Figure 1 (cartoon, helix red, strand yellow):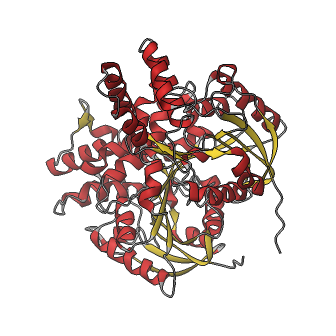
Figure 2 (figure 1 turned 180 degrees about the vertical axis):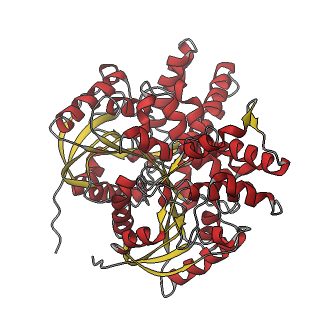
Length: 285
Length: 293
């Protein structure tokens, strides 16, 4: 994959940072997600003396959880320094970030200490890595973790029993609702990740806009089109996994230790789960 | 050393970042001659490498990052202040989007061991608190490959330095022509003269205290107009003048570095009016000692 292609996944975050407050679950953690992350972290961190945590992405909700622990070493890695700065402003405990080490680097290229971290933490990481680089990314994650280390992350995937929505039906549903932030968030998140617009494990704003364009003569849809265009950069792309078919990539490097329940409102609706993965011991010759 | 003192090394840079472009000059930052010397040493350190070299810059010095970008090197930088990183990144001439930027501590860097071919720093040593200096050298050695190089300009009290009172120094400067570098040179001169061998520190509070007699109505007033301007320029740069540097006698620094590095070469350039000032700012070309993977 060319660098240019790779940048399609990471660079648009500069723009997204500006609209972060308007974006909701699943692109950022819900309250339930925050509780689940905290529960998994407690199980690992509270047993350690001076745990070292590596955070991929700058998600303010996750860093706010970490800010409440004492004596932990935190390293935050993001492709854009603008994103780290913008996300820090949205944190509740921003004054505690002076102790964080920030790294502006591509996750796939960052030369971090190996066998060093107790926990690797990040929200929807695999969705922001190009499909062909996902296995390599997981290998890197495995390397950074100490023996017995954990990878705690939310993964957007098509889990067994998940429903694929018809884009047309989603639009019909949207037209019956009031236009507000909630209906907007419900629409784009399901349309992007749970509908039939994605192709070859890829979905993105361009695809969504292309579909909306077909119905633009409707004034409400025209407004929706404009809102999507203003909130997201048109180049932003995500990948999604088919859990049954793709879990081998994860199982190559990690053992699934626990999985949080889906949020009630998202049951069978969003394909996002928080996984607690333990580093797998790989014996090489 | 207590924490407050440790903060006197790094914290002041946050405010200095904003004044950098206007007030900072050689020997405080690399001159054209220094840049050439750095370039020579860097090229020497890359000799024989058959892959893209990897370099780490301690601090955010734009001149060093520009040299590395022009040589198509993989560059990482580490600075403790995000303000300094952002301000210095604005001054870069060759934009390098792939540069890895770290807001972090030089004594506990996130990088993998044995990763870099060369580590660079312009006047970094004096910004490391004394109690952390050994950890600092160990950390540089850790991230460098065996036989990797550490190239840095270091502020020292060179052999033969004659300590003078600040009044004697001021008198000396009334007799020389003023250039855009003179205020910085004068301040550096003061730093050498307030150096306390007992603590190993040059504390700019001492400079402020000794110049108090010339402070009138919120600015300096010295009998000589030229000196008055220089003193006010110094104040503009270093206000509130509370920063501390851990510079030391060259032979002391040499001994500390020799535990971890071979000092292969040292050279100084002519940046200052007084040659004895240039000698306080040599560039050391060091190589990691006794390291095997």
